[in-house]
Length: 77
View 1 (cartoon, helix red, strand yellow):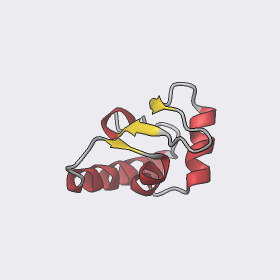
View 2 (view 1 turned 45 degrees about the vertical axis):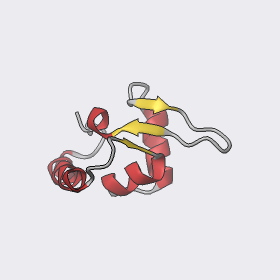
View 3 (view 1 turned 90 degrees about the vertical axis):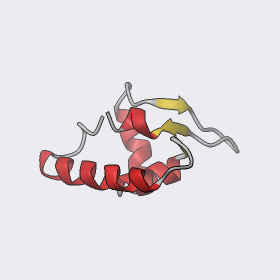
């Protein structure tokens, strides 16, 4: 699901993403900040990507006091 990144960065980001996820054994579910960190983008950039892609795999949309939830495995496919 990293198709919205430039093709030059796509392979690099995917490699970093998979490496960071291999270190994360506790849960497949992350919040917006954690996913942004894994992807190497800012929180605001990730929010823009979610808005631009109606098919972005969001488990739970965030709101005031309620965090976004993402399945990392769903985002990485």
